[in-house]
Amino acid sequence: MTDIAEIIDDFSILDDWDDRYRYLIELGRKLPPLAPSAHNDANKVQGCSSQVWLETRVRPNGADGPVLMFAGDSDAHLVRGLIAILFAIFSGKHAKEILAADALSLFEQMGLREHLTPQRSNGFRSMVERIRCEAQAALAGAAV
Image 1 (cartoon, helix red, strand yellow):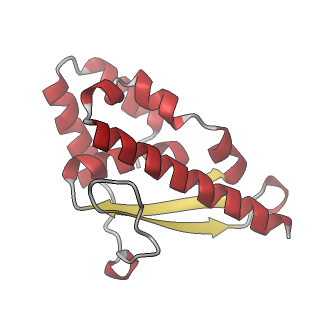
Image 2 (tube, one colour):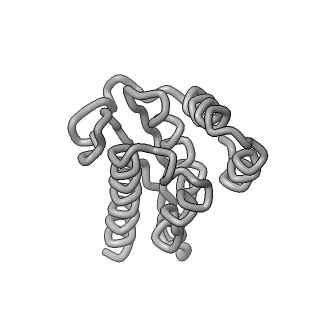
């Protein structure tokens, strides 16, 4: 998986938004396939204009708290690219790191907000909120 610093660097090199859209689509193509059984209502993200599924796996990690791994899919190529960006930010991180990360700020820094439709931007926020809720739930489960 491409890391977020590399994605930000690649974005800064691409001057034209058509090139950036193509890059987003390419990132989405690199996502591992989501198991057909994971395309279910429990994994479906509400608030997205496209269909989006996020599957979360939580791994306990002792005193450092749980680590969350994500898998996902969408029926829209561009949204798959946004999912890839979110996974670069969040997947494989501790729940506390996830809650501390500001994905929306990175989204703005990359210029995505101004170049995506309001529906896509709202969908991105819905995915971030879903991931944050998963991190909070993992922390609550670890405290029990």
